[in-house]
Amino acid sequence: MSESLTHIGLEQLDDLALGSVFLATGGGGDPYVPKLITAEAIKQFGPVPLLDPKDVADDAFIVPVGSVGAPTVSLELLPSVEDAAKTLIAFEKFIGKTIDAVASFEIGGGNSVIPICAAAAKGLPVIDGDGMGRALPEAQMMSYPIGGVKPTPALAYDYAGNQATFETDTTETYERHIRAFSMAAGGMITAAEHAMTGRQLKDTVIPGTVSFSIKMGELLREKRGQADTLLKPLQDLFATSIYGQCKLLYTGKVIDKSTRIIGGYDIGEATIADFDGQSENMSVNIKNEYLLAKIGDRVAASVPDLITIVDFETGTPINAERLRFGHRVAVFATGCPDFYRSETAMKVVAPRCFGFDIDYVPVEDL
Image (cartoon, rainbow, N blue to C red; front, top):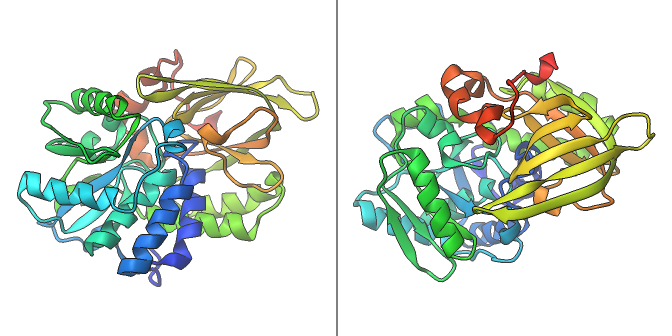
């Protein structure tokens, strides 16, 4: 974490939201409205302390909070300034413990700023890190449960103020139950889950991703312009990060995009045609996030590495639910944190976990 970045204030929000959409690989929900409500919370309650995981006491009580549902719904079922804080207050009452700090599910779009909104209203610090280092569609894919943190007890809060509590034996079971409640509640809810000690946080969090997302947003803002000119600055930024190599895979125009809400996820595919007509089309499979990119029949990148689609003219990253026919785009791929290349993580995030009949090959080897 940058030594100078000790708090998240209004001046960091735009860059955080912009950078988080790049890291979110299309998922995490559009950050526009969550950013607005977080700005209101900061105006009302003040900046939020940003806490390096190394500085967290081993016996501290840390609770991740964020949205669960289909990102398309987030464009219609808008959150309020109070939802995230009310979720934490209800969780404290339910579990009978006081929260010491708030963490993120994922450094992804709207879910990167919702914990800050909750922390501001509760007067708590937010952890500089998250449970994915990107966005992924299912709870068991977070670093917290991969590292042994139990998902429950958990509490979910819907737009009408209804609450549901959860006690499950596995994270996979919890994912099914929380997804079913989200669908029953209109498609998007706020949840507090995977509560843990400071010691557990240090062992399982993907560190430094909030401050890195702000750096990413600064870069995208300062270098705004045609996407192919971004490659060198992106490579320089990622080279000193937990991610690794960044590649420009493809440039072209979206000639087809189709997604449907199935089982509480946005599921579908986008097809991109090369500007010059010299290459085969690129197809990108979507399950909330961009998970698999192929040029013709050749795999160009796959989950758990990051696939990011940006506007070709501006370099602005595009959420999957915002991607449209006719968009002129560039497709980047970036290596994932080493945690997600471990044997344990691969059991839940390898391409076959998403139904793709391929082995994972790191993006730098493709």
